[in-house]
Figure 1 (spheres, rainbow, N blue to C red):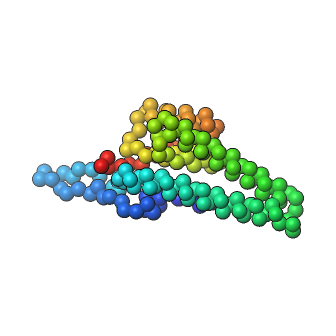
Figure 2 (cartoon, one colour):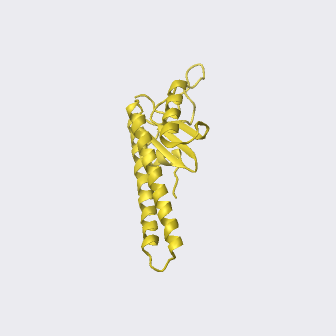
Length: 162
């Protein structure tokens, strides 16, 4: 399966605005030199692309599994295994969508949930998340996916607020 890092997704989304600042008279620089910060529109593009990429990878995997299921030369056991993998993939997808829908209803309208092997990665379009926000996201993910809270990683997409 193809997994893309947040950096890959940001680079694929287009321009990344630099936060490198000019030195002030006192020699200080505002922000963290070299830190890339996405604009709100770019963050939306990252979320959209992550969802599209996830669905494209799953569609390709389902196609491959369907070829195994339809292959008369393979054993029933191989076909059962392929079918089980397809069912598991569909269940993961349904859990991700359910979690994303509930997150959207709670104000996290641009979120991507990625489930794998008992863990969940959640990317939300927010510059910062309060402890209450993180707790709310963890609660939604654990209820909708069954993933334990300690296995939930929440990553905000940093925007510059412009």
